[in-house]
Image (cartoon, rainbow, N blue to C red; front, side, top):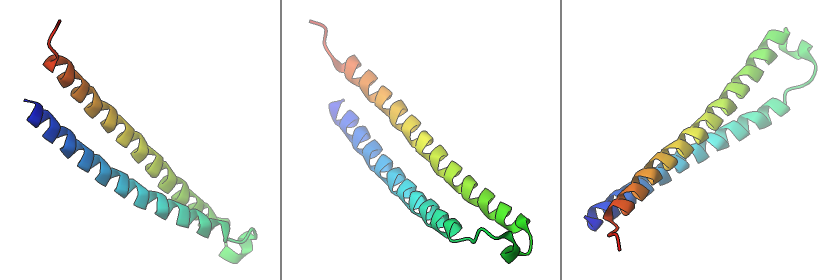
Length: 96
């Protein structure tokens, strides 16, 4: 039984590591886009209209929101899996 628990924990560890790598990539993209937005001139005339600047700002905001939401999902997955592991460990304990 302990081998199955250990195998499951190792599998969860690997999957959470992959999720963290994906989130790191999303963070990098969001950071790069925010640097691009900072390079946008303050003069809306260079865009022809302010609509393009608003669209770009909205796109960056959505990208950051998606990244933060993904972090929340990862945290929830970690908590759910940890809860299962702790429950399994308590079932395996022998009362004294």
